[in-house]
Length: 270
Image (cartoon, rainbow, N blue to C red):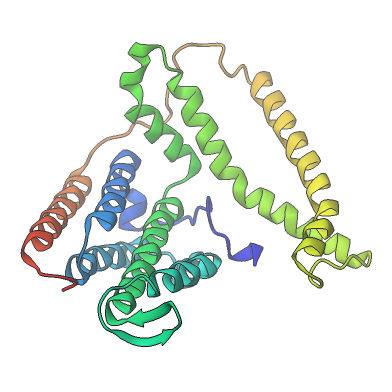
């Protein structure tokens, strides 16, 4: 299960999305995520899904990686969909006491499931095609106006990117510790919920110790390289907005406009 979590993983490649400016990718992903929640009909949500699937095809990342991203949150999707299944209005198709399933509830459950899945895949496209270094540069450049308010933009961008970068590392460390505990006879899977939580204590303690050790090693390495000694830092690679970035932005703007128009003109869930 831990190996299915792909948050923070970067998949090297030379696809169109890999060559895009990271600032534009970050802005477009944020815009798409906003319009995923703005879409209120199946047609407008379908436009967003089509846009995200196009990005998946252009990313050059194997579909198995995106499948892992969805598999990791499958329980959340199912749980949320089941809850929405019983919140529909209209005539009941099936009823158990106060709980009933209506056609509106079925539509709502499917809509929520598609919305969450699209959100996860859209976020995965960004992390798969953008390295942690590029994310740091993009965040720092986008937050540059906050420097006038004495906000430590570079430090914030660095902390956010390091946190994202170490998610796969900590997951791998957790998997190793769990395997080591199982080899020593620890039972981590049987019993009730309380017993499973107690069984995770021998895993959490060495994981926390390992995380602090890694943080200390990273801080020492950054100090040895004189990190933070200069107020302004230079960049080995300069970021430039190109034709590909402009065309991508225009495509997202067109889809966003269609979503807004579709929400106003299309009735109900259509």
